[in-house]
Image (cartoon, rainbow, N blue to C red; front, side, top):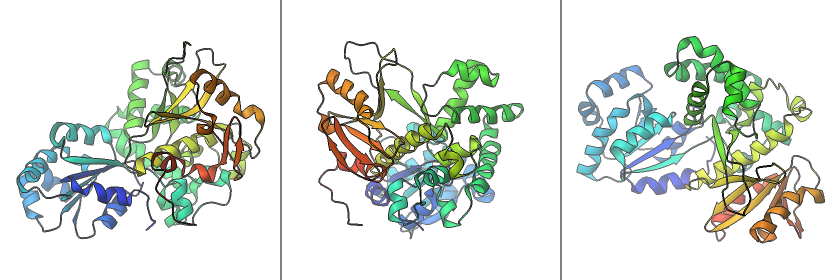
Length: 401
């Protein structure tokens, strides 16, 4: 069992009668809730007998498993209507942290929570291992290319599975098991190609019409499939920041994958060496850093506040903006291991328009030396793995390494 940065946050939210831990498959949700609540009764709704009982007789199901500690309902998306009865139990008995729900598809779980558990539930998201978690657990791959290529699924590290063995099976089971329930079976192979095309667009503006045309489906179908991938925690969108600088700004979001190892597999990159020489390396390094920012926010129990900025002509851009507590932190991301002066051009331009403080600007690159420059602060990827806590909780001191 690896230590997870979300553990303390998860226990803190147990002041709610219900806690929902959401996230993509095999991100470690089950292991984490069992560690956080070891005395709770564990019930997996992925098990057919358990699920059938919960669906046919929800009241009897909860009554049968009544106990003095609580209940973990794992893979809750398979019986979302159970929330009605969880709500009644929570209102009647008022037991903090009694019900712990986990789910892999937030479009099913969120609908149930919105309809039944509003105001009674604390919601958290668990994603694959963050860079800080890899460091803390002493399982960080030896090189940056290896880290990007391997990704962060706990099972890869726990069972020492080669990524080229793990991801094809994961992709196949995800498409057949989860997506197969949501789209026409005749479209499965087309959907698989669609996901591969998405991987080739990491860090790019998401042009739905172009994706649809290249896949051979309609634009509405492409939008629906993007929604399914987003709701299943495979991809996320980085929205443009709309602060008005009297400039026309791009309004289309950028597309990223939560796990770069999965993206590498979809792109048929079969080794860290192949990745390092690939023309996808820069985009995947950027996606690796931005996805890690997302994980850092989620592990703190804070809604991610991440954006990018680009003018409509595309002449000026900032890779990432952290918007937190009335402050904006512009961030440029470069995959090289050296710092060049022209890397700060986007930051300088943005600070000129926004009248920003260069001390709040960061350049993240593939080395470890910190450089305090007049245009901003250059930091290595390892320091970036703790950047969000340092900005949102500056008084919290990290334990020494």
